[in-house]
Image 1 (cartoon, rainbow, N blue to C red):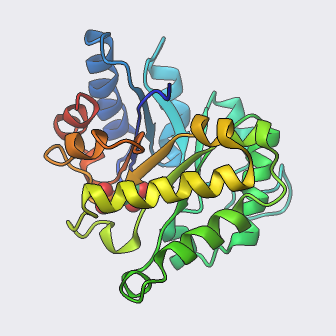
Image 2 (spheres, rainbow, N blue to C red):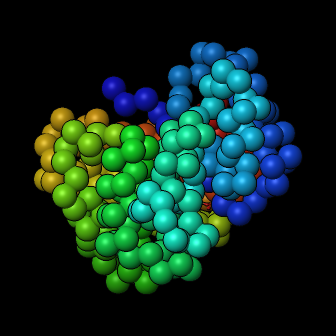
Length: 251
Ligand code: 13P
């Protein structure tokens, strides 16, 4: 049984003070509604992580970073090391987000190095994959996603893979208000599971959680979560207001 997994990617939003307010509103909601059996993760900017871990004592909400370096330390101006994340009790890290691929030139080779490094330090990666609108319209969406998964998970064995979450985020659905239909999202996620089965085995592919991301909102979460293979959501815009995000958590 895969436990539903809802994650908020705050991207480049929220000062430390704003982060504390929002994180507390989410964590309080989880504390007050213990029956909600969902893993809930928030991924604020680095500048808020240390403070959030200090301020939210006995938190239910999980903390994640939006990126990290594939090096432990050294002369890498502007980078954040996995050891620094571990030191702040960070549990998860988003890797390979399409915005990192698009605006910061991250390729599959870099993402594969990051995934290996995260695993080495017991950080759980959320690996993002997804196609452009052009790739979808030309029928190349599955090929694109398959190639990304194979390259990003190269030389990662099945024991380690079980801790990886995949987030299927069609690029054309991110921040656009256009969601993939729940059937299309489920179809791609089933396909991703079949690739994982080929790469590993049935048990591993059934253990790994796969989220959908791209304009997830309170009004469409239920339909997505009702699908057979969608285990959760990676939420951007709607994770920035507790009133929306808490509704999504409580789908
Ligand atoms: P939106 O929910 O704003 O479309 O963003 C999705 C996303 O990129 C999450 O990582």
